[in-house]
Length: 335
Image 1 (cartoon, rainbow, N blue to C red):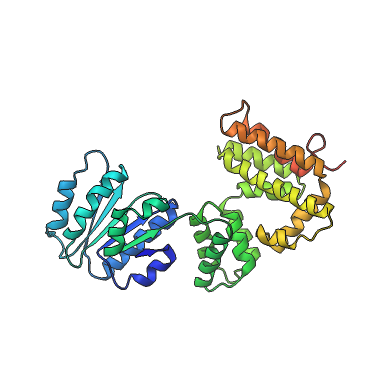
Image 2: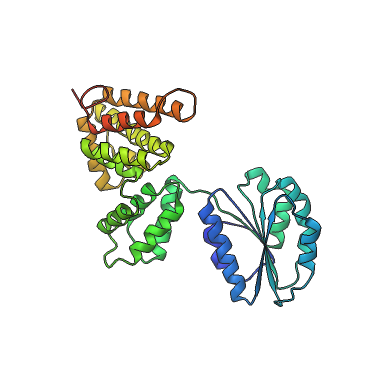
């Protein structure tokens, strides 16, 4: 059977002989593996053997391990991590499935499988004998729904918190789960508590740069970008965060010029009420022309990050961030 990660816990009461965990989201992959291992241990599977499909790996010895009872436990769990060609895995794995003894478990962990690969014969063989869990990165509304579900599991029902967590942790689902766990321990799990958690987690995080820039705080914007550069943070993520805010501000300016409502835009972009006020204040401060120039700087920054243009990414990041904060001059505040 093919499962989503969130559907796995309900299926672990009936332990299957084989599980294939695939995907491009490391946190969800490892969480799924940990849940299967825990369920197997609870069911009396006493030994956990790990194998890595890499140079020196022998399928013959692996099949011998599957077919030979352990000297240390009556039931074993075998974990195979694939680091080699999936063609090899697809050829050899079906030969292993009949060798799994009753009550024992095989977990196979691979990277992302596209739609066609998930329909391959070897994947379907696993799905027939057990479960295939596709742990893919969530974004946009799917991420929001996932975070909202995790919050509800923690006993917290708050749409605004779900939107803020999904926005601030997009691309890092482990950070989202950590924020929810820490919120659960708070006596008052509200927006103020979340601000303290996120601020303590990364005081000079990339989102802090966009926040102080939107507020028009030039000194803090300079300090935060300088700190990120000193800490050797990834300029690509900082660039993405700045470009995202500028594109959103440009759409706000366009709609305001047409005297069109902003409610649909804010809903599509998952902008919670408190952040709406921040964006509207920045939109009043920056002209549409200046926003266009800052977006051109972002395009140049993207080329620098990709090695298609010569330049210092951090110099350009500071230029964009300070322009967003309202620094006088090119790309600065409304004239």
